[in-house]
Length: 162
Ligand SMILES: [Zn+2]
Image 1 (cartoon, rainbow, N blue to C red):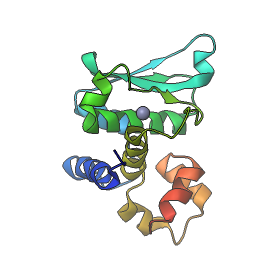
Image 2 (tube, helix red, strand yellow):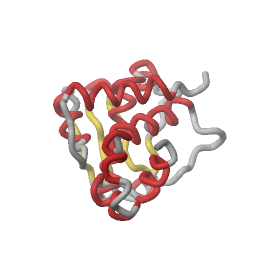
Image 3 (cartoon, protein in one colour):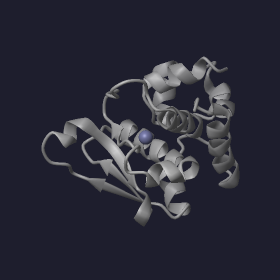
């Protein structure tokens, strides 16, 4: 199935509206907790620490985040996994198809549409275009990345949509 970006973005916009969020940075951990999803930071041992950014445990409603990630990557990981919780209940429950969120883009073959949708959800949640529009004329991408607590790459991608 092709990725449904419209549905993913609408789900993120609904959370921004539901929680009446008006200013950056957006805190996806607070939103997750308000949605009944616990965020747990774990210090991974061995190679998994370099490979995995995070994953979800749908059965107990938790998001597990690699404690060694830089803070903006932790934030994106939580937002990405929150996207799965909001969009992909069946996918999360299917141990055969669900993928952990890798630290680096390491999918064998094309990125699954659920993963693309979770990325789109995260970008929409963390950098709402309405907010970006307010600041974009007087802040550099690096400054914007600091304001929204995301990577410069996420800001640059979002600026294409303005
Ligand atoms: Zn994912």
